[in-house]
Length: 445
Ligand SMILES: [Zn+2]
Image (cartoon, rainbow, N blue to C red; front, side, top):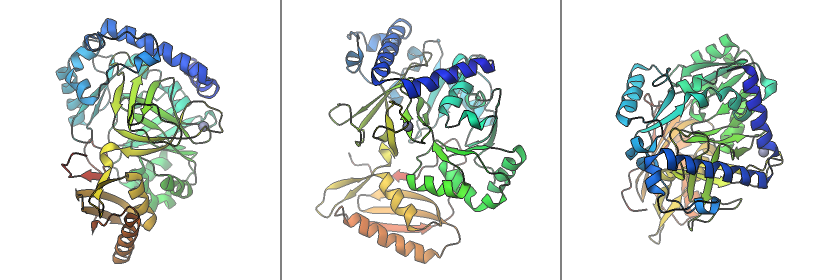
């Protein structure tokens, strides 16, 4: 693909992001959604059956269609995709690549295959046609959190695994170098220096590991971009100070490029790439300031593995209008995942949800030397907290954390037992996300 093609994509996406009026957004989405429904009725036996009883003439009709989720998508993989792909063949291809740590290459020379481990161990397979990933440089320039003024981009990209999809971001003026997140932090800084990186892309858990080594960094970065994990607002400012560079977050999932930062650094839903329904407990669209109980994603660009009204597990909060002028909805915070919520018993015996963003905030703000932590819910009255500390007075930090948690939870009338263990917490070696919240509860929440 030529630089011209990428620049055309960049300018189109940029204009849509900043210039679309609310009416234009709705019109664009309705047109895209109706076209998609027509396509899947014609090409996907799964959706043809699923939507058999439904007429869809507008977005309101679309909102009445049955929803799907990852297990439904995987169970009907062969009949859902429109390219005649068989799950066992695609899965073999993906697992084989994973075992060999050979992440590049297309399936049948046409498709990028992504493998997600998921939080409960259920694997997900995501297929993107090469025709889409070839357009990624333009999409990345417009929605990847970078600016044209950052060109040429020399990106050090750190993640547990790599894929052909990430590699396809490479293009004229964009050079992306991959390193595994298992690489020694000092070595990562050395690579930054060697390649004269101006952009660092890494999950927050990895940035935390780099903090003690930043004195070795020879050239200042233009930007730090985080993804793959929740970025706590407090950590965002901590990283910005430490790296002496703006820190922005992109919100991307296997299911689509969900949200991108604007020039003010706020996260906006990519309304022209995904149609996102954020609903309350009564299935009504939520307003700014509210947290969605349900998040349904329709990918507007991938017709090979069409995902329509696909329920995500993520918890997000909708923000107010942004001064940047974009009418794309603002996500004020990605809070975590539904299964990260703790359920603790109050003194009156009721189970009370305690959100992961709150718990993270309490822990992170107790001491700067808490490098990493894992919160494990044993039962409704008992939580195990594992802390990785750097050079701190262990007993002092542990005592202050106990006091902090007791007083914060007392406000919810919760009296919970916390066991705190100090230990080294390595990042996961396999294809799984660093999971900070683990629940052993088997009760019906
Ligand atoms: Zn904005």
